[in-house]
Length: 442
Image (cartoon, rainbow, N blue to C red; front, side, top):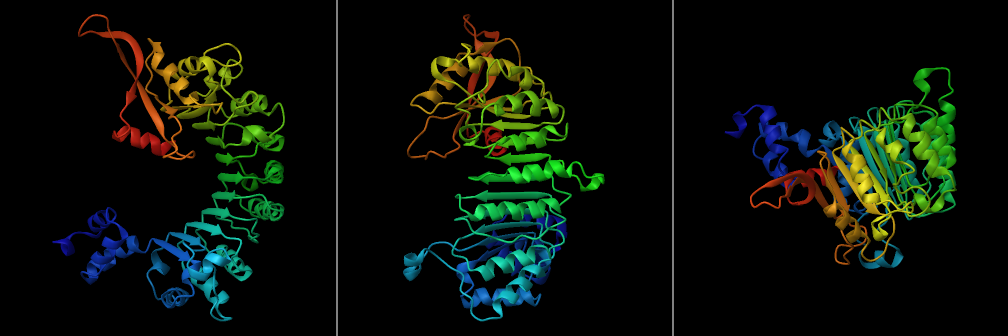
């Protein structure tokens, strides 16, 4: 019956199958192959340690000559140095790219440039990648007319010379470690950002100072032609500086998502937290949908009386992640910070998810927050689900995103069989579909 179904239904069926099953389904007949090809070939992985293998070079050659399905259907490319080192590779630091002849650099450029429908490139740059590999990949990026999302993960201070990509709307760069080459990398980012007028989402993560990027973006807002100005709608960074906050304060009611990743609270100067809550958030109060400021153990990045008004003004906010001082259930102002945050969240009409983290890292800090949540009662209804960080477990690892979920429900009455009009937070089963969806959002 499958060959007699319309293409749309076949592709809906195929989208539910793993890649191995899609491969088998393509082999049934020509019609099924034509229907499943756009799904099977939508994702291409280029692993450097496989280039020296015969089948790897064969695929690259067929891509360069436009004789394989990825040329027509690929939407996403993952470029990685390789997986596990084997044999002598382990002694020299892991898998490497191995050119077979002098023609391979041009062949690699042609292979990547042949996939003209590529929209997303995820590129992990390894310090042992030869310069010709990095140059070949960088040269091919600006030949992709529909490339809108570039995600870079750069290890060991590797330098890549990026060219402007006018169609880019999302740029993500994660520096694994600080190296002198990072300064050059920031210049490359400035070159890309300065010529990318459609940029809407930017993530600059990892060790390093990106002040030059924020200064450039602020200067671009002064350009006479409106289409050459960049107003970011989504921003993620781990290094907060005065230049960043000055840029975000220079335009208003456009920013929709902002995430300040740890360890931002440990490396910036004084007064920036007040600027963020008193100036940046009010400037975008009518547009912000998601705010995440975790890891604020020091200064005024934690939630309390000093920034409650700024949070209350975010009437369209859907997800919020803040830290609180958890010792003795209160903050430095003598107020139960968890109770204050829960009361504030109940007044935000669009809020769907509130995540609360402990500012301090000590044994029992997460337990203190969970106890404060479970002890909280209110007559005010709220549709937001509260997420509290679960206690650290060595088995799960320190970087685990484990959470305990809570939602409001009528408290148990003193009368048997009765439900109180007072609401209290009750634990939500983490295996429920709603909890899984929320976990994916935050």
